[in-house]
Amino acid sequence: MIALVIVALVVSALAPIPPLLGLRSPTARRVAAGLGVLGVAVAAIAAAETDPVTGVARGLVLVLGVTAAATGAVALVPLLFDIVRAEDDRGPAPGDSDPDTTDPDSTDPASATVTTPLRGGRLIGVLERTAVAAAVLAGWPEGIAVVLAVKGLARYPEIRAAHAGEQFIIGTFGSVLWALAVAGTAHLALY
Image 1 (cartoon, rainbow, N blue to C red):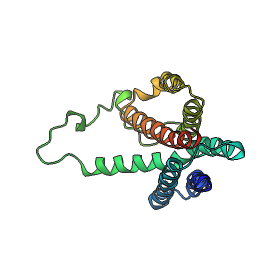
Image 2: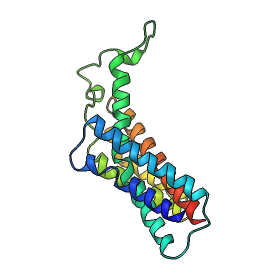
Image 3: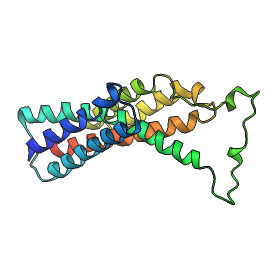
């Protein structure tokens, strides 16, 4: 069973390669995110059915767990942004009154719409997921709070712009939840 855990974590870690190579279409993101999620799901089921891993396999699970946590959301987070954009494109339902749908004041720079990801988001996300997974696997869950605090403080000036805060929250939640799922799966195989 441990071989299945390792193979599934490899699939999950390698799933985002097409988007990293430039295939950034929504279909490529869906396939990559689906393979990543499938890999983690299979690894979790197999890890639940196996004894705690030891030796070289233990090292492989640790390395692959952190790697899959770091790389897997490279396709998943942009897919979450696609879902949000699709929701925004539909607009409010008839009868809904949302004060946030009014036209922004063009003289206020903080109300300008952010149409591109926050600068450096992909690299910051990889580092964030690596740190979260390492903290969980090291048995230091407080490290998650440290990572999120540092990220929030560093991004604070940027997330004050319209829609940047929403993008920050969606990206961070998707990223951290992915890292926790993968690290939890690796932890299940290890203990």
